[in-house]
Length: 120
Image (cartoon, rainbow, N blue to C red):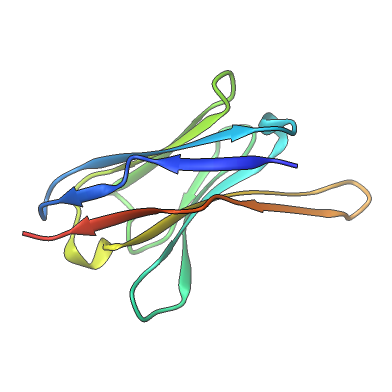
């Protein structure tokens, strides 16, 4: 089992920045793909970014060039640096740990979410 706790959300003006953190406990953190998702008001949850155990990243087109995901395996933490925030980035942001074992067993863990509000 992996437990995930997000932090760093809050209220920010358009054009501002926030850094979200997701601290993991339990399990072997370094072998998981780590992901950020967000749930926008009135919409389906959407994927934001992924970082692999080796540090490769992939981003949704809607945030590419503005958000940067990183991980610190020693601290068992992933980060989402969000710059150039827009009102449409307002959402609850969730951290996810995911892997599929060599035997095909799926491991999928979620944090409780952190609210990000972009408004003047």
